[in-house]
Image 1: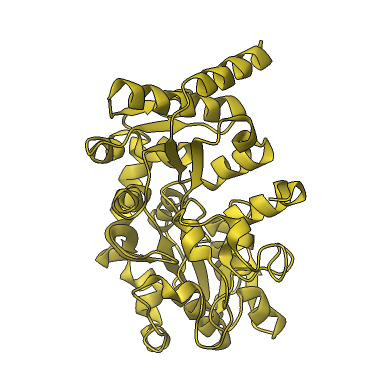
Image 2: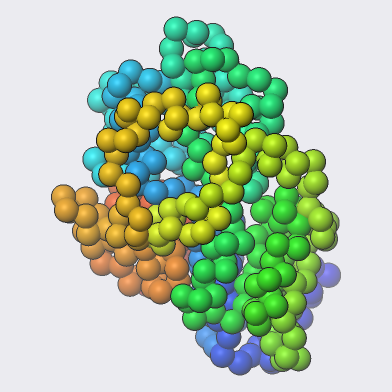
Length: 363
């Protein structure tokens, strides 16, 4: 029965194919699309574009450089595994750890807090990244209470403002909205985007979910509608997770944020509120932060003055202006074992997934 549903959806997509550019903004969606070759089984006219849905890919160079500078000053830096390998101006956190600095991989903010509690003489910094999905757990930890020798470097991003920007700067007809993010924020935040004429379908992560999402965008385009539809009701509702959002905004406030490869986006990030400033790494270690160059434009991702990213086109890939196969480094100088740009690092990165699932097809 499952196979028949897939076949019917594929047939429906093919029968109603017209030139259409659908963007997803989720690394897990790209993984499903690449792994199961969905682009190969739908018409070329229906293009699936990969947007900035990988959190480590859009973490700006300045935050990585700040984390490395903190480590070099004697602080203990804790971060997720993917973040450890993303290159900054002078290398990655892994490179700094190889130089002897105390940088540790953790699975959650609670792991970092435990290190701070067990070693009260050390200053421990947690590098907090991710979209609306991961930010509530960091907020909850701060609300529970953390030791005085703990601080957080916040690099969280909010997805709807980025989607809003992409409607202005990218040739896109509709969106597959991210399922994980939508479990927290619900469907309401996408309404202003759909009201401007961009169909949006909140989509899950199985092959059937993605195929269904495509057909629902097609249906909206054909009927001249533009609204937000939920194709992932088993996990997402209109309001989202009210408790998670309540905790989130007890601790954080929205601020303008720099996205690597894109630039500054208004109200697209999260900063700690005044009552939590004593745990803000930027505030606690302002003397170090002030020495970091702070880019306000997307050029911090490639062609920098020391040539570290020369030839890398991750900026274009993150905004669907190019595909990984168009990068001169892809599969040559740049690979998951030796990533030049951030899109090749994470399991959610577009270049990583194209390398793993499409390069043997000659793409």
